Amino acid sequence: MKEPTTPEEVKVLHNLLRSDPQHYLQIVNQWIAENPGNSHAYFSRHFAWLELGDPQRALDDLNVVIQLNPQLVAFWSRGEVYRRIGEYEKALEDFDRAEQIDPAQWTEHAFGLLVQADCHARLGNEAAALACCARLHDDFWTPGIEGAPGWRQGGDCRDAAPHGGRRTGQARVILCYPPPRSETKRGRGTMRSTVEGACGGSASGGAAAQASSPSPHPRGPPSPLRGEG
Image (cartoon, rainbow, N blue to C red; front, side, top):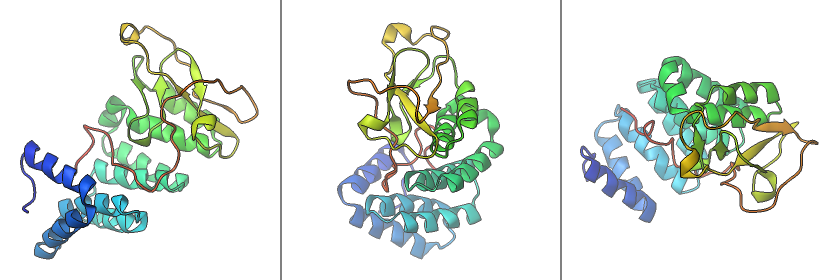
């Protein structure tokens, strides 16, 4: 199979990654064999290693990508792998590098700020976590896409810990329900703290948004940051 050049071909390859990662790995290995300097191929292969439960090899491939083509998405993706395996300091270093490449894009797409806040919170740095959240758009919300914490600007918060989130250090991440459609307009709510002291607050019942627990299987950054080119 050749490298995809159309959205349809990308979808076929994506489905293959999910259904048969070993076959997908064979395909991208062939791309690398044909062109060892192909940063796109190494970037594609890191997803296979994640599907196969080998985050260290995913990091190795992303290291090559960064050497060949140090773009925002490469640092984002490596930071995401570090975040999922609990290496929060290294994750923050990569997220900061990604932001420096294109600060406007980083702020506009918001998920970078959210995962930065998550890492700071898990390291016990409440002030830094809240500073990241304060930069989110007034109408930003997410149910917890791609392993990022669920977030809502205003509304009822839910503690992540009882639903799979991990408390680390002196702070914990608070997840929020997504707002009803009638509340998604810009300016309808006020910012709520996303982090509180580990000894403060209380857990609420009910199903929270997806918790941001470390996992060796990150799916890569959310669109439109996904991709490398």
